[in-house]
Length: 574
Image (cartoon, rainbow, N blue to C red; front, side, top):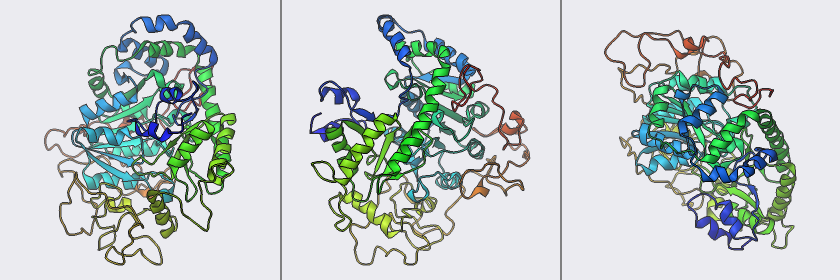
């Protein structure tokens, strides 16, 4: 492996060089891949042998049309083809969603998959970023996220479940209630690219609910689940109008012959696929335990096929990444270029135990100094030898007793679009909020104001707010204005909670922000129904499902086949 690996990372537009590029720089064999989140147990060796035997025909001839391949996939998953659009990877679908359905603004929690922030910014849209807090394990509070969306007046909302890179998970009933609360938005996107690896809930997917709503799209991946990133195929599920609009813009042959061959061979391998998901979940538990035993390394709970880890204080992620690659031939994802993250964090893909043992050994040698090049983590007494960016994060964590930037979300509600913006007042505070330390934290001694003695390295510099200027210079006492016009009734604008509690509620606070849906109130007709709002006098989505809005809807079609696992891969294979 070449020693100048840093240049490989700097010379690519992606977060990491491709495996082909790394292989060319080595002796012909690539490193152990803990970077790209892929199922290591599927396809099976027998399936690869079958594809190898058909290689000449697969790469020689045109594939069938996308409609033919989509129909086969829908037959397998028991989904109506008119509600599905297949793309050449989820990135192609995200691109068309942005071009066709995002008019002016998009909200997304950060850190998350980079295309949800980068793609709309590239086309001139306003991206409102809701910062996930390290102090809460990067868990997404849907109630606070909804308030943030209302305060910003955002027209499109995105949720990744599980989230990438931290693997945070949201239960189905909470996601459905969020979709109902956001029924007046132009679009709500639920990215379920990694949901098949989750085991916290038997049927966590909301694809059935998405098909009933006029403004919801569910995005799903095939390459990640089937261990075939190189084929580039994924799909979205929505009501026929939304799915058809995206499908009409896709090329007739946007899916290649490999994608077609894999889709048509899947129906014979449902049992192997279910077993592969089960094995990944077991490996995730084992890998988390092994990594947690390393001193100073923090491992966050995950429902994806990857783990988000914080390196010990003093460790610089790029140095750890480069040394793991050059000294141990291990490729990891350093997250310093993810908005909302820093180089203190790595995302490590779940792999078989033999590879995990190699990773743990490599981390021990790089972090704690059992290799000839010494330790990356300095001694406790010195606390030096790491970059200013990492040092700022370390100092912030220390000064806030590990609370991090907990107040950023509340301040964002007052008009702060970026995690580091400091121009908006904090909730419940009369003055400005220094960035990035949170105002209003329950600490005995608040952080000094900017006008006091200068502390040039205590926190990153505030990020300017180039997209959305503040409407007024004076701080507003109530940071949650209601941007929706009065004539647009909100289907579920967080009314008073119903008496019955939410069953099996996840640890999301405040829980009262998502009450049980009240009986449908039909406003008097005052004109045409606004776009994106359910027609007056019609049935609510809960009534269509025949539930009270909280009870789980029966799995009538996702996927439904006895020989194929359900959305979480938990169904028994026949």
